[in-house]
Image (cartoon, rainbow, N blue to C red; front, top):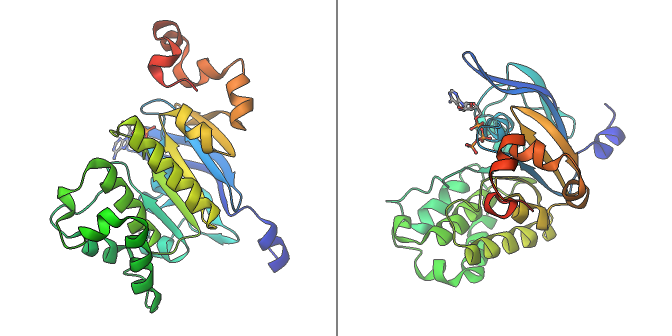
Length: 257
Ligand SMILES: Nc1ncnc2c1ncn2[C@@H]1O[C@H](COP(=O)(O)OP(=O)(O)OP(=O)(O)O)[C@@H](O)[C@H]1O
């Protein structure tokens, strides 16, 4: 690939990726892309393979087949730290906040790959944006509310100054008002120049901010398009819920956009 082709290439390309755990195939030869500046959502039911896909991009699990490229760099053989160095950060499902470490220490952990002097000013900017966390910077992070912990997890991921921020179920376990705040923050982050790939079961919430979305089911892509295209798609319920679930549950009970 030439330098010119590299700048035109999508920021992230997932090509024919397969992830297996022993006899279980969680992701089957899946391909997708994310362009710079987009918010892209991956939605789908429990067990669709969404977390496995993000884990393979983040270097936490090694795909058995396929390739993952950031611009023109193939990531498939590099580990977590190298993936972070290439500019990808993951906010995992459940946030993985270190409860006994302070708010400040959690943030500093996110910056361990950096050697630049701007870490201190990034911390200061974060505490100005989130004064509650600033006031509690020296308290154990485990004392924060669920919403505050989610903001802390996002800020910790941003401390590595990623070009691509990936989030796994950021709305999980949060009250609707807090979910709104988290998603408003994601839009601000995108507007600040960071591309976002977000996995959600709450398709309605993700569709409200996403430029494009993919629906995953049984480890494969069932549908792809803009949120408007997907909402209008005759096969959306079948792709997302499965025919039997669509019959069994009213759409509003199951997160239908
Ligand atoms: N570490 C693992 N070992 C064995 N099987 C796993 C492992 N992680 C996931 N799986 C299996 O892989 C399949 C896909 O799981 P995955 O967590 O990727 O889906 P998901 O769409 O993120 O679902 P959820 O929303 O429930 O997390 C499931 O059948 C799951 O049981």
